[in-house]
Image 1 (tube, rainbow, N blue to C red):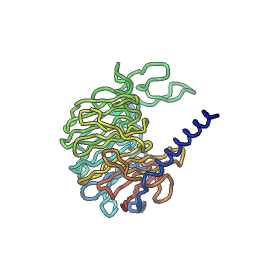
Image 2: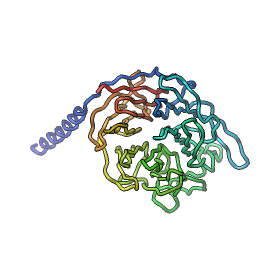
Image 3: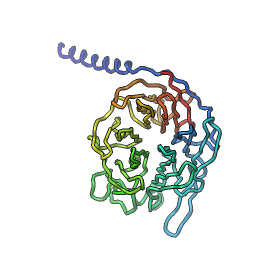
Image 4: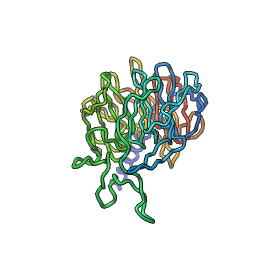
Length: 366
């Protein structure tokens, strides 16, 4: 009886501790507006980003996907569109119309020189446009093989994806990278559903290659030359389970949203593990604010099948939680699967939502 009482007390203590922890995160007061912009064509807003002029770029899964049969390959394009709005929310133009790489929007980012970068998980490409929308650089390549059905009643699959109980039949960008560890990928820009991109002060490019079978970070020079890659599937330091985002601070530290392991891992620019941040749910999108004291924002986005969670955390770069705001929902000031956060300042944010097909402008009051 005494032992049972001790167990009950211990369990109660753990529950109370968890409850106190949940209650200890301050709620941040905020306003939000979903009416600042009106998309020319509606669809899932996968990416939002602003430039130094305050212009907003929205990468949305909208439009009409087109498949063109070639001699040996099927070419897919369309399916997503990149829109630009001015600081007042007025539509300016569409960028990249007809571009081969625009297929399934995953993210959009703006670098310190106001170049616009898109991450496309359908074409496995990272594309750089200059401030005027002219194409400047391409990393990655579309898969060699297409989704196919080998016979009646047989599920469709890609040839370069390993079938159950068998070996992959070829292709590019698979998750095993030859004899390497699972998820290590292949050296170079052999991406498998990349999720995000960032840069350090020297202009080096870091690609989060982690939404498909790869779980790695790939580093390139500012000219696009491959430097190195690190990471593979797992739960240890320097290992990943679905990388959803990446951001870099002014000192060169990289913050990687390791969603499957419910943490943000911190590395230096060479891939050396430094620390990890936990206690913020499942990081779906992350962003580092500008200013003398940068803050890290991370969305604990709800599962597509639920209305749980949905809040966005504000943290110091040390991992200390400053507060949180928002919840899952479909109304204004609520969030439906936040896939992108832009935080040029610590109080002015744009949030891109998959569920609600919109970009909300968020203003923090403290």
